[in-house]
Length: 313
Ligand SMILES: Nc1ncnc2c1ncn2[C@@H]1O[C@H](COP(=O)(O)OP(=O)(O)OP(=O)(O)O)[C@@H](O)[C@H]1O
Ligand SMILES: [Mg+2]
Image 1 (tube, rainbow, N blue to C red):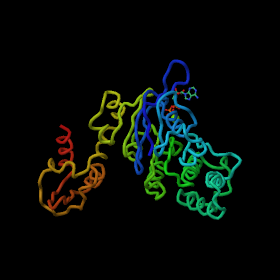
Image 2: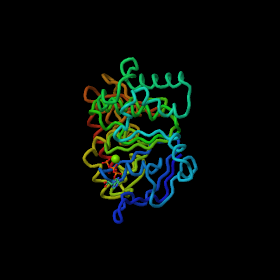
Image 3: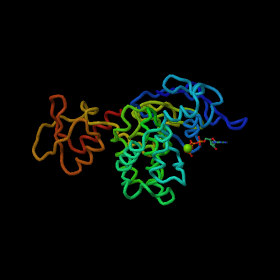
Image 4: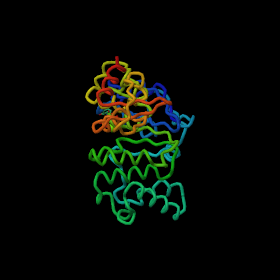
C-alpha cells in the first residue's frame, strides 16, 4: 500500500511543482497519474522511492514512512520503470533485467530463469536479445527491458513512468494488453504515469488528474467522465469524450433505455457486459440479441445510440 499525505515540493523559492497531493493506493489497484507535461507526475513518483525528498507532507509504503527507511531497502521493495528507461549502457539486456535480483543475492540459476521468462513474456526472445546492449535496441524494445527490470524481483509495489511512451500507437495497444494480462502484476500496488487519456482509462482502477502540481480530481474513470469536478477535468477529456463514453458504458448500464424488441431472426449474440464501443462494432453488420438477467432484447445501432443519449440526460 502506498499513501501520500499533503505532499508538496518546490525546486526554487517560488513555484510549487507538487502542491498538497494526497492519495492512497491499495494492493491490486492501479492508480494512474494523468496530466499535461510538467504538471508534477514524475516528481511525485520520484518522491515515493526517495530519489527526491518532499518539501512537506508524509509518504508511506506498506505503513512505514519512507524517510525512516534506508533508500536502498525502500527501492528494493518497489519496481520502478523510469520515463527514459534508465538502462545501464554497459550491461547487457539480461544483466539489466537481473540487477535487483543480483543485489538481493538470488542464485545465478534463479536469476537466469526469471530473466529469460520475463523476456519471453515481453516478446524479447532471450536467444535473440539477452546478450545485446541497450544501444542495440529500438526505443520500444528498451522500454520493454525497463519493464522487465522493474518486474524482475517481484516487488509488491510498481511505479511506472510513461512505460509505453516510446511505442507507436499499434504496438502500444498490444503491449498494454499483454501488460494487463501478466500474472506478475496481480495484487501489486501500481502507480502508472501517462499523458495518454485512453491508456489511463484502460489501465486505471482510479485516475488522478493533475494540473500545475495540484490534483484536479481523483476517482474511477467513469467519475471523471460523467461527474467531472471542474472545467479543467471536463475540457481535458473533451477531445476523446465520445470514444471514452462508449468504452465506459456497458449494454447493461443502458438496459432500461433500450427498446424492447423480441424478434430474434438474423441476429448475433452479444453479452450485456459488452461495452457500447464493442456493441457498435458488432451492430454495424447486424442487430444483436442480448440476454440480461433472464430478460432478452434485440438491439440495433439506432436503438443503442438513442439509449446512450437518453441515459446521459
Ligand atoms: N530537478 C529539478 N530542478 C528544477 N526543476 C525541476 C526539476 N525536476 C523537475 N522540475 C520542474 O518541475 C516541474 C514538474 O516536472 P515533472 O518532471 O514532475 O513533470 P511531468 O508531469 O512528469 O511532465 P512530463 O509529462 O513532461 O514528463 C517542471 O516544470 C520541471 O521543469
Ligand atoms: Mg514526467
